[in-house]
Amino acid sequence: MVGIIDKIKEEVQKGEEALKEIVEEVEEKIKGKIKKASKKPTKNDAELKKKAEVESTTGEKDIANKKKALLEKAKKLKEKLSEGEISSEDLKEQVKIKKKDMLISLEEYVKAGIYLGTKVVTPNMKPFVYRRRADGLAIFNTDLIDEKIRAGVEFLNKFAPEDIILVCKREAGWRAVKKFGELTGIRVFAKKYPAGVLTNKNLDDFFENELTIITDHWVDKNALNDTLKVHKKVLMICDTNNFSKGANQVIIGNNKSPKSLGVIFYILAREYCKARGIKAEVPELEWWTGELEDESEKKSRVRDVVAKAGLMSPCEGFGV
Image (cartoon, rainbow, N blue to C red):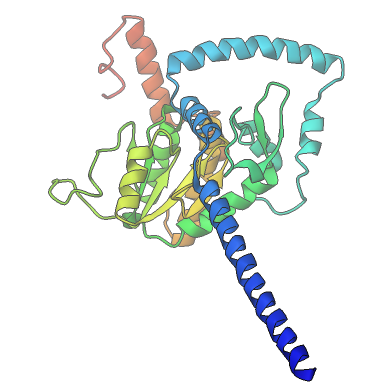
């Protein structure tokens, strides 16, 4: 009798072990399917990427047309403001800014519109978005903007000027990036990035860098791709419609506006010069946001006005 019971126990144990193996095998198959499904790009992902790229690569004429449409919407929003439905003070409260020592004042961040994103929000940027505005634009959390710029400053300070390049194809950033390059000694590629300068050793202008600053990965994708090919570091400025893939450090904020980009490069220039002991006279924030002009800019503007009036050629007078 005892022998029969032991035999039954043995059979039960074998059955349990076999069942356990089957369960484990099924679980592995399920995990494999889930993993495969998560890697497979969906139709929505492709549509999102297309919308995001269009926002960043739209021509200036299209932007002007959109601006007219937005002005009409602004009139309607103004009416709502007068009715007490929306207020700028509400906006400040809703972004929930913590009281702390910020790189610049909250008022300056808000005035430059650095918190204004786009209508498209990528999965990478979703954690930094606080809400959507009435016109559909996503709003960055200004407190997080300050934190990410601070982290970007610390990352940038680790590299020597000769090991860094800054790429900015978007016209809105040309004034700020050129001044940034003058102050820091960092090589700047505005307007156009020469293809292959980081990857093709046969080119006369080939050079090696350690860090590339990308202003917008959609319009500066050639420089980003070249940097990734040679396995160098990337500091990327990301709007709500940007993907941060390939970036070692991200700065978040509006990368379509001259004022917003001016604020970002003002802080980067100020802090980099300070950390690296570079003796450079960094202009006040108002210069970077376009509220002030230096003497050379004033003369240039006067020359252009006079030349357009037909009084003299652009190169006559003013010591040119």
